[in-house]
Image (cartoon, rainbow, N blue to C red):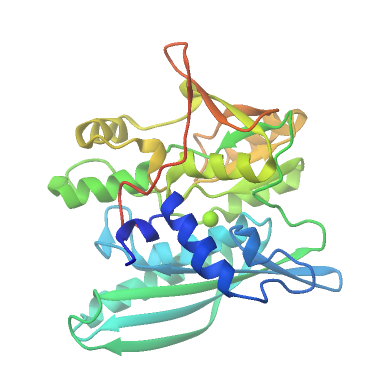
Amino acid sequence: MKIGMSHGAGGEVMQNLISDTILNNIKNKQVNGGVGLDDLDDGATIPLNEYEIIVSTDGHTIDPLFFPGGDIGRISAAGTINDVSVMGAKPLALTNSMIIEEGFQRDDFEKIIKSMDAVCQETGTAIITGDTKVIEKNKIDKMVISTTGIGLAKKGEVIRDSGLNVGDKLIISGSIGDHGMALMAYREGFGFDTDLKSDTAPVWSIVEKALNIGGVSALKDPTRGGLANALNEMADKSGVQLILDEEKIPIREEVKAVSDMLGIDPLEVANEGKIVMGVKAEFADEILKAIRKDKYATNAQIIGEVVEGNKVIMETVLGGKRILESPVSDPVPRVC
Ligand code: MG
């Protein structure tokens, strides 16, 4: 069997490749009883004395490198910072490994580095080590960036994507589908003419505001596979059922329009500056109020609640109910 595009797309096909070929062939997958590879969380942890070191890594191959609302540099820094953030830890440092195609424009390279730096400055994250390699023309596509993020949390304060409890409320930090649909629209030739922009942004400041209030049970960034994938993964790992109110899920009009035109469900495409939170019901309103003060979460909403069961159920605008499934693969490849 050969590896196809769907094997990297964040859906069920990729999950199967990960469990069959990666997890089954690696023996040591955990350190000191921390969160390890088998947990398939946004990051891993290494418990050490009264702390847990958070580690997360991500490779970025994105087409095009520059897109409305960001570029590969912004996404390479924000994406990894976000995976550390949703473990409930402040992202302290990044590593940066870049593989560049021969002939790459030096000006573009500089723009990309400056974009990474801007995101890091926003979150107080340092880029502390890296690697640069160049490959002959046509052997790779322009540029691949891999970043690893390191964060620190007090022992016992790490947040998991599996931490949902019955009774929790679900909060989304803002509008859904912006990144995937912006890239798709751009590739389809709508160019920079539409108002559609990627939401690529670091979410640490949102997480921090929520943690300061307390009552956060679970966190996840709905990247590849979109909100549909993130919610199904959280429900599955937590052993609970989610009831969503479709009306409350914020989706921009431009995103809806492009989604309709291309026949792509905005709930199944990547977001790069959003988080899903499960919070204890008594904290939900206060957390919502606090995070709405963040410039990246002004449109945050309570979108549903956690009940007993094992599905993700959407109560539709029309008053019906439907099961929200995990997408088989991402309908928009190479977006992060
Ligand atoms: Mg993630």
